[in-house]
Image (tube, rainbow, N blue to C red):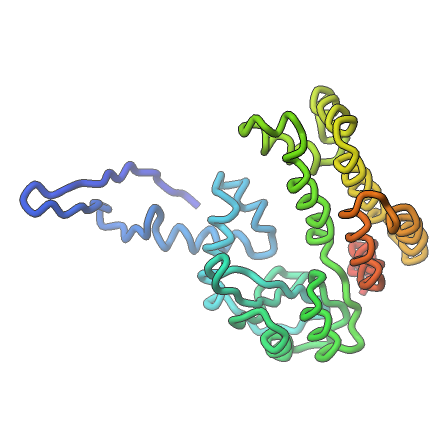
Length: 286
């Protein structure tokens, strides 16, 4: 794909005062052409949106918005064995929809407005094929709909949403750190606390060690997150059960309330969490 970046200034008519932009006849939609957007969407087939946004130096949210904007035109009819169901925002905070993807090909199989249990059930009923595994988040409506439509399928918890429990808790706790009072440091703190220790520089690991000493709850959330990452590396169900049991035993009655709450939430969905702990291994052999 080849594209050209042009400077398109806003102009004002001296006679009528009307403000306009000259788009050279390219059919610009805000700051990009529809042809460019469609090419970016094609690159998302079989790949993650994050990879595409990094490759073309575009904001993740922009590529995600384009992907779902043109998603209804990209629907395909194909049989699937493993699917992923999730909600997405048509207008954040206002309108949402539910989509189903084939985990093997990355293609969108169905989309339906709303994100309640009825909408999720309806969109799942549109899927053809012998479904053996369904990946979703922890929403109760998702669990009920999956159990209703595919009662014999393995329900796998999406590890992105699982890790997000901890990263959201860290962001809420961040304001208690002295360093966070410097507003330009907020993103830096979030990045350091969310990433694995081996991915940080020696200086960043030093900052993390200081923050853990400074705030007890930050330390407990950080430890629980990295322990959960260890649990997620399990490659067999026996190993997943053992590691998850150890995690529950250690954090279920923690003095840190938010960690204890996360543990209780996961206990309520223990079966799906266990399957998530060896998702890659399991889905590869289904």
